[in-house]
Image (cartoon, rainbow, N blue to C red; front, side, top):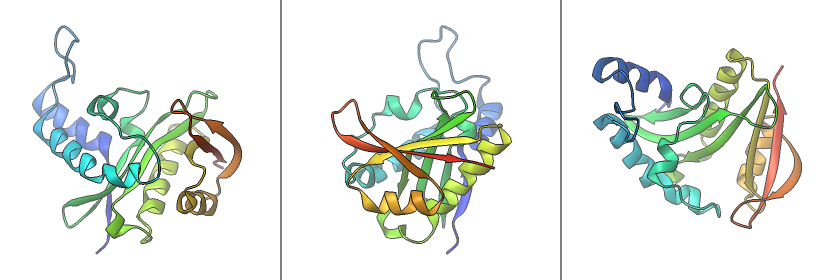
Length: 178
């Protein structure tokens, strides 16, 4: 089976246009999330074990729904046979004006090492370039070698080790797009 890569923003913009004008209520106090977004989140939570198995802390619903600059333009899902098998959540970076950031990439263990992570990253690179963001950043747990192999194969450089808010050490990777 071949994975289809779908921009999360395209889905959300399409459904937003059909169902409501904005995700925020009139008083901006609560999110109006259509049923399809909830079903995507349900699948994200099913895949969360793949994230926590790398040593990363689990994400909450609020973290998944948090608005970040350019988040929906830089986030993608991989779909095989109508099932989400992976996703990448990106956003505008904060280190430099022209930076973007992979906040999270997760692939279903049954579909790992089949090129899905690479496909998601390539879509992210293309979207970053369209948005004139040529510096791509991400972090990964220091001891998680599959991530290190993927990121270095894609041209990322491991430039330093940083300590996360949880006290764990992470490799900090940067790739300059040309």
